[in-house]
Image (cartoon, rainbow, N blue to C red; front, side, top):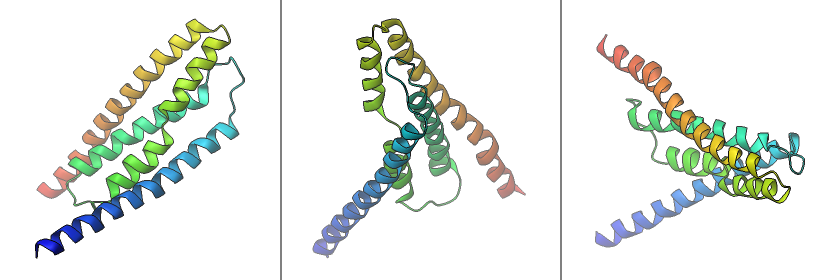
Length: 148
């Protein structure tokens, strides 16, 4: 039976990697599409990357509360697919960093540092706000429904 356990763990690892890859492809494609639909001119404030990162972090806040506190069993591949894959591929630290460097190279250092700070604060605030709202509305609603 120990051989079966190792084989099952190996199979599970490949399943997780497969859903992360599929989700990452979808998230990165959506992020790329947003950049193509709303391009940023050289030296301009990178609004698209900012919005993608803040929205993505907000969705991560919702997902984490639903997965960990939702009161209902969630398939074990939901978090790797949506959290690590889709939303990890959608949000983008690499583009955020490149946007910062582009602003600096165009002589917009104050805007670059402002962008860096506002993105960090906006992303953290989005996670906190959406997690709080989700917890208060959905999770408490589930708890109330179970108590009835």
